[in-house]
Each structure stands twice: as C-alpha cells, then as structure tokens.
Amino acid sequence: MFEGQPQHEVDALMKNDPEFRQLYHRHRELDKQVLDAELGVLPLDDTTLAKMKREKLNAKDRLTRMFDRRKH
Image: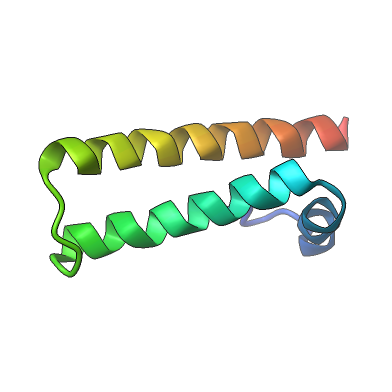
C-alpha cells in the first residue's frame, strides 16, 4: 500500500501508533477477503462485497492521511 515510501517510516508508524497499526491490519484483512471473494474462494453477496470494498478504501484513505501528517 505504501509502495515507494521508505519502509522504515511505515515500520516506525506501525510500532509507535496503535491506531495506525490496527487500521493497517484491518486494511490487509479486507484486501485478502475482497480478493478471495473476487476469485470465488469466499462466497459473498454483491452488497457485502461492495461494503467491504468501501471500508477498505476508507481505511486506505485514513492510513494515507496519517502517514502524510507524520511526514509534515
């Protein structure tokens, strides 16, 4: 998710910010579930899948804002 960003900065946030860490893990979990659903491994209805995709996008937006705030 933070391709092109220094890994040590992401690691520092993961270590020092519990909210960032929790949200990061939630985003990864949603990412895996969405992929599994799209591959047909995880049976989900369209409404649930759309909800998960929105939650994943919101998590990514929040993570990006948190990361950017730390850098400025």
